[in-house]
Every structure is written in C-alpha cells, then in structure tokens.
Image (cartoon, rainbow over all chains, first blue to last red; front, side, top):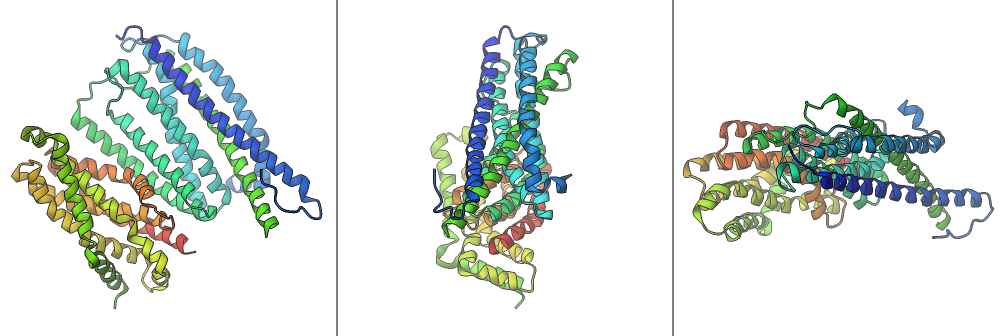
Length: 56
Length: 239
Length: 216
C-alpha cells in the first residue's frame, strides 16, 4: 500500500481544475465576444446604410 | 431530433437556455463530486489515498473517447445529410475533447509517479490516450489550416471518420504491444475492481464532466453561428 | 489506354523523373545511419534495440513523399481530368498509391535488407523484415493517401500531413517493429497483412471523397 500520497492527489485535482476552468474561461470569452458582435449587427441591420464594416 | 435541431434559429433559441443550464448542473456536480472524492470516500487497499486521482482521471478518459464518438456521429451526419450544424458541432467539440484527453494524460502521469515510480509509463491505456490526443490535434489543425469553412468541415469530417475506424485498431495493437513488452502485473487504473463506495464520486464526476462538455460545446456552437453571421454581413457590407 | 494504367504510368514516371525516388531512399538510409551514431556502436546494444528503428526511418521516408502526391494534380488541373475520366476516382487514387509503392516503397524495402543487417538483426530474420517492410509501406501509403488528400489545398502542408497521419502509422509500426525484434513474427506478419489490406481498400475511398471536395 502506498502511504500518504496526498501531494499527488492535490496536484492532480489542481491541474484538472486549472485546465477545465481555463477551457471554460476561453469558451465563455469567445461566446461573449461573438454574442456582442451579433447584437451589434442586429441593431445596425435596420438602418438604410450601415456604412463600412467596423472592425473591433 | 437531429433534423428538428438543424434549423439554426431553433438551435439558437434552444441553446440559449440549454447552455447555461448545463453549466449550472456541471457546477453543482463538481461541487458535490470533488469533495466527495477527496474527503468523503475511502482510501484504497493498495493505492492508498492516491486512488482519489481516479475521480478526475477516469471521467476525462471516458469522455475524451465519448466526445470523439460524438464527433464521428456529427461527421457522418455532415457527410450524408450535409447539415451545416453538424460541422459546427464537431468543430465545437474537438478542443474540449482535446482538453479532456490532456487532463487524462497529465493526471495519469501524476498517478503513475507514486504507483509505478515513474512520471511516464508506456502503459497500454496511457499510450492509446496519447494517440487519441494526437488525433485531436491533427483534426483541430486541419480545420485551422483550410480557409474555406464549408470545405474544411467536410474534409475534417472525412478525417474524423477515418480516425474513428482507426481507434479500435490502435487500441488492439497498443494492447498487444504492451502485453508483449511487460507483464500485466502493474496496477490497473480503473479496472473491474472498483469498490461500491467509489462508484458514487466516480459517477458524480463523470456526470460533471459530461455536463461541462455540454455547456462548453453548446457555447462554442453558438459563438460559431454568430461569428459566421457577422462575417457574412461584413463581407456583404464590404462588397 | 486504360485510365488506371495511364495514371499509374504517369505517376511512376513522375516519381522516377529527376531522381525523385532517390530522395526518400537517401532519407531512409540517412535515418538508418543516424541510429548507431545516436546509440553508440556497441553491438549488443544495437542488436537489442536497433532493428525496430528501421521503422522510424521507413515512416519518415514515406512522410516526406506524401506532400506532393496530390498537390501537383490540384495545381496543374490534372485532378479535374481525373474527375472527368470514365474510371472511378477511387481506382485512379489506388493507381497513384500503387505507383508510389512501386517507385518509392520497393527501393526502401530492398534497402531494408542491408539496413537490417547493419543494425545487427540476425541474418535469419532479414527475410521476414523485408516482407514486413513491404506490407507496412503499403499500409503507410494507404493511410497516407487520406492525409495527403485532405491537406491537398493547404500551402506547405507537410507538417500538417505528418501530424494527421502519425496516428494511422502507429499500428503498422507496432507490428512491424515486433517482426524486426523477433517477437511473435508469424502473428505480427499476418496482422500487418491485415493492416495493409484494410489501408489499401479503405484509403483510396476516403482519399477520393476528399479529392472530390477539393475540386469543387
């Protein structure tokens, strides 16, 4: 039987948490960015002349 | 059901509340499963406390395979029925599958340090997972390399299906190879001898990973659909 | 002339023209030469670990040829002609693969014999190693056609092909290396034959599907 080993356990949980939280953060930021762009499109779409596309 | 959801407007309406719902369920399951696995489940007879690594390692392994199977299904739908949403779904799932595979590899390596006395053992399961990780990278790189998204989606779907055929062959050959080179006397991670007391946290964490995947994949799909709309209107505006 | 034979001949000639076949062969021999330089010349060490490394050399040599298999067809318009041909595209892709196997694979298979001897494989095993290389290269090429076809439109796709194709190379390498190190040779050879058969049968189908998309 392996004695102790808590350091490995905590390391594994920390790595997992960081990786999953990092992935979730990236996905959330990307989703928010494009949701904002799409909303901007909806508000400008009804005007007669939207003009040149605005790049962020 | 697939054809019902294939309408992007209907998908956007549905996913607008499905994605946050999945995220909330995932958060609840993580909040329950992580402490359960860490503090309220028994240590194991041979592996001691390190068996707790299983609760983050094994679900990552399960779902990185499951996500690839999902991508294979989406690829088939994309090639046979030419649903644009299927391409978007496969693309949205791939990076999450890659992250899960990466988590599985790193936690497997951490588990290996006390169990095998080395940070990397060419164990059959870990090796298969490493190959799966490379397959994910290749799939993502192919999507990124081709500019025409329509074409990229179909080509990536072909690659994904070829990889799906290849996976069991890899599994078989790697298992054959690892029994050839070492007797199967090492600890088997997540073998058949999981005590009932360990099933609770394991299944809770598996559910947490699944709903996390659901939330992230749906958000990615929503972002892709919105991005395509924005880019198309920019192109029309510029023309 | 039969379109299958015409494609085979054209590709075969292209591979031989301008010493094109020498490059992968030289690559194979160069990689084999690097093994003892990296491991040290000690004969017992080489005999224990050297022969399977032939497979690394063979895989690298095939990888180096894959990028240009379809790239030229896409650029000079011969892909459109292939699509217009009465023969199915799958057959023409198979012809291209066969040409690659004969023009590039067979020289590597033949060079495999002296390479195996130089890496201290026992002489009685050399015949099995040569046979396994023939089968394994067919499996490499069958899978490689898919990788080459999906990346055909990508500029400088060589690295991308390598990344995509490596997982498909894993099974043949495993069984080929088992032959080279003398583990369960008969079983490994028959599995290799299965790999080669599967790759040659399915590879052209997937590659042709990808090429049809590339031409659209």
